[in-house]
Image (cartoon, rainbow over all chains, first blue to last red; front, side, top):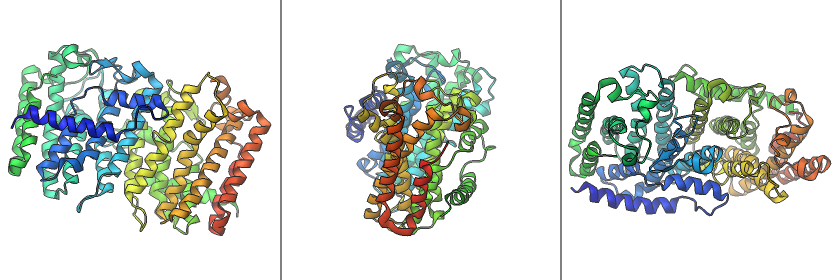
Length: 293
Length: 293
């Protein structure tokens, strides 16, 4: 399959759906809704929503039913970037080639726009059509677990605490598993759940998501070193500057690249048994390994 | 009825339930869970949870069924205080007589603890027992609407934008309706929903909540001027200092006090038709008018 065409088509459908699902920029208070949309429509790759849609397909579902959940995970991802870029966190001025939210709207509005996106994500999840095996309670619970105190936020806390300190490979894996892989895994699980996935299918896709999510973060750490800010659309070399623990920093570049390839193969092997319906997930895993930004 | 005894009993039951419902302080990452608990158990009045429980009673339900929702609204309220106290927002060092979250844990962890409480609130709402008329989708939706971009956060944005500017009485009402009354109204609606309230009952309680919520905020503004920091457990006189629009500032103290009394009477009259089961709600409204902190 042609992954670039697939990605483009899915992304276009998603952009339309997201635009319709979100409050208009003119809705009062306009500053808030402008800030929410500014970060949401800043040209992200839409990896997590596309994983939601591809996971729904992988168990025989229609991407359309999964769309509210695709929007929900993108709201979560975007809020996490807004808060992560704040001066009290990573202190970043540039994101996707544009000034970060607090640079444009001020820190107070950036905090609140993040809070509003986080809240709205759960509103979207609650509105997702129930299926035989799964309902709003399951969707909301899954989203909260992936993004909350035992998922994404746990990873961010340990990441923040680790800055400037010596981090062991075990701690680094914990950070990556939680900060990045948890929401990626939940995205995949949510897509499959909206298509009435069985427990067995969810277990397989969970393993796939965990390996894919780790691979994605190792590649991200590599690109932070090898690419320019222009290529990445965000400040490159930040990890070294902040003395962040990364795979290249701990293992060296060659071993980090080998680890990314190993994790990608592991992910792909995990879903071999799912057959041709999982071809988009296979192709996404391969594509992420070769990405340049 | 003896409102002080009622409040104490409900509060004690709530404290126990909240303690059980929240992740332990020793759970990894411990800093995050300590920060979540630090602000949650800092000695709040528990107004919103007690309204959840009293609203459940007002339509013939058992307070126990409403407990997860009581915990959820307190998580929302607490996260909003943590973020509101940040230097980029109200910049407050003192809350409930204790140093604010960012003073103890640093700004980064304070942002993340707020995010985690917000996320966990929806996890709790999703776990609430469905009844004939209402399920997790309704609970989550209600909580998101009360606390989100068309509720509490909308009020915070307009409040933040109004600092140091001339605010009209109409704008002030908008701020109060959203920043304070929206979550108070949702708390009451959620409690009633968990007890299988009808649309008619919800409509009556919504009106009650809107008047009570406005009254509560007018009283809060009055106390900010008339009480000392010691009496309030937070920095008094902050509104004047930040040139915040308040009812006493716009109408004068006497008219503000009359407005609080009028709104309280309006709230009480609204639920007269609900009979003796709504006696706790009546007593809470009366009690709030006479409070000194």
